[in-house]
Length: 119
Image 1: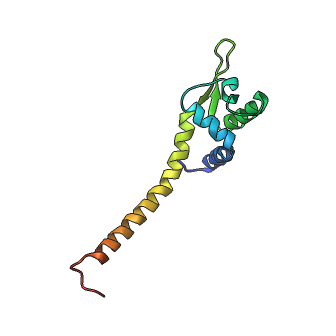
Image 2: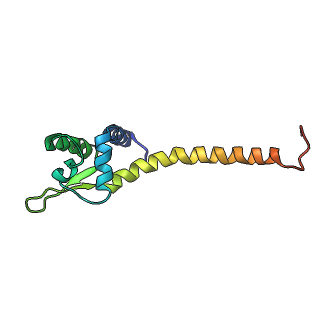
């Protein structure tokens, strides 16, 4: 769960990494399974070196990992780090949802047909 300065740093790194649209596309692609740098570079008009730099940023943020498979070095999504991000977001989403449910209840009571006006 999110509680300390280490988590703050991890969140900062992850959200900074995801601020770039190319890196978000890489994460989206990796959600379908591992891929090599060459495979990740295919949809972009940038070099594999540039893709490698983006992957290093994602690695530094803990969002992806690389493994070695003979000559291949596939890149994998790190679901645990994504879960940390969604847990942090959910904390605030749940608070807002609770507030909206309370507002819905008030509006429903106010709109009730048998409720006298001004009461």
